[in-house]
Length: 340
Image (cartoon, rainbow, N blue to C red; front, top):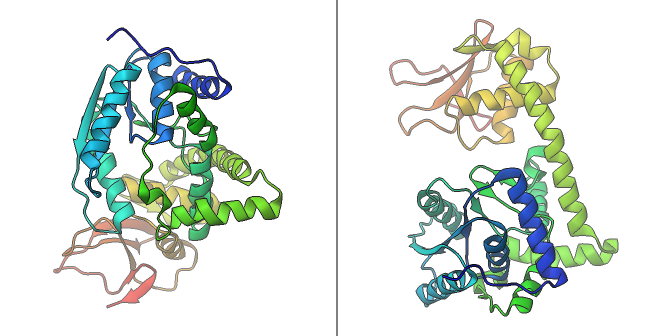
């Protein structure tokens, strides 16, 4: 290996290089891994990373969902080495079916990347356009500000240097450098919600609102993440004030603003093993604090088929424990509804 491939100094190449350099200066001074799919976004990211980072290891996940996927993965690995990556590994995975193919493929991909990264941060090729799509998906869920904060530029170990770069720019980088990106047919399949957002909803919004919608959505996400970081910090203080090591004081929580109280309770639940929390969970738990009518506990995700993880109000405190056959709660509300 003679070193990284020399890149032309076009506007697109410089934009991506500057984005990667800025990310590295803030989060990682040493070697990094790049998740390389062979598409335009991850190819452009890889080309810039090998110039800006001390060393780059390319990780190529083969989902094995389409005929010829092994050849696509092998071509991506060869492109990575030609660009100057220190190494390129293909990671074959088996995609399950739980939650739909998109969700299952994502779980398999991130699990494989995490196992192979050797403690390096992993750079992902998500762009400003991906961010805008993510914000719209979160808005449709109606789950509060957290759901429309979009993707963070760094959530260890995942780094996203290109969140301010448009998808058209990464495609132009590939053209400028002479790279031929793989066109995943799933990215044009209308049965996927994100594809319809990309090809139908966002272009319509851009037309109706006069352009700039994707950038505005990305700016909104960034502002909400900044606000959210402040609120999360205040909520952690409230949590620790109310916490005696085993439960939370109802009186302390009830007198706090709702935005802080719900964030504090969410953090406490996650620390206690709760999973897949929804707004329905959190509002049902909040009613135990602010609208107490003698209702039973609230079952949240994170238990087992035999023992549900239950939040209950007991003697002026909020408790979290696994229910048992010998000592079940009198009435458990699952996802905010009463069940026997």
